Length: 332
Image 1 (cartoon, one colour):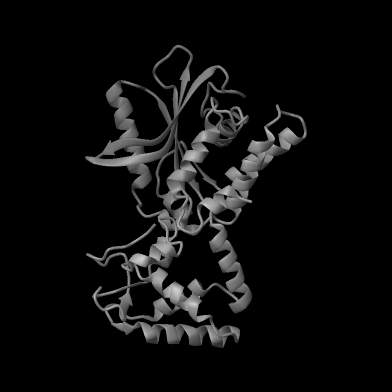
Image 2 (cartoon, helix red, strand yellow):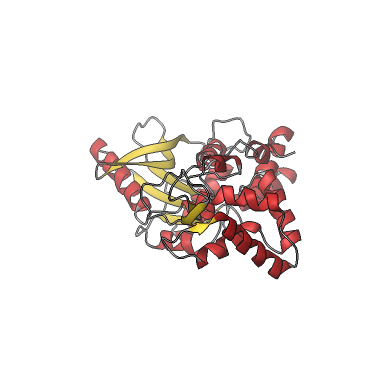
């Protein structure tokens, strides 16, 4: 049983802010998870590996510091509000001005990486707030993405700032790797014991990360589709969408027939009609019922393929692109 996969299945959802909240909990020294400062110190060490002068007053532990975790921290830049997913402020004892500030911007899919200026706007907004307060706080920035990808690397590289690192949820230099290391230390008796209940929760979370934060329903469905057709039905839908002309009307019956033919030709297997109908519903952005087919904020860009040009006529669709205006996009 995996509580994370269960809660994100059917009409439930675990969204990016929920994942950020759980990470904030793991980073908080004052919580009851039993990790102490190990996860946070591991991230700080990544900065120190890049430059030994970073976080200069912190050595091997945060015990002598006051650490405050601030989720969804609002800042303002150019009269625009930006919310930094997590801001960790580190204070010296008996000092109300933070010595260090560690910002974490979390993206659990490449689809949620949208703005080239997001990171710099968040940084400048926090700099302005600290300057207005008269604080000379050192600011560090961690960009946390699902994995090492071109899109996430491009976003990180255009962020022109020295005190930055790029971490991932899985693979090398990842939160997954750091948690597994902590569990290994606990297993070998090198740190204080972690409760069995919390170890079970951590392992469930790591399994959720491994499947790209997919629900149990999505995971089972995609596994079965790959077994039946060689790849997921959504991949066939996306391939068909690439062949569509912008602004041209297509009858849904013709779209389903074309995709059915693609799947049959490639796999030798006829696609289940129910599967085809579910995917049609899920991929039309202004179809209200798509929310019942695991269309969430974290995956909707991948599934936003078509739209009804006239919502009163649900027999005709067009190719959808994000620059199309005045079209309601439904997500769970």
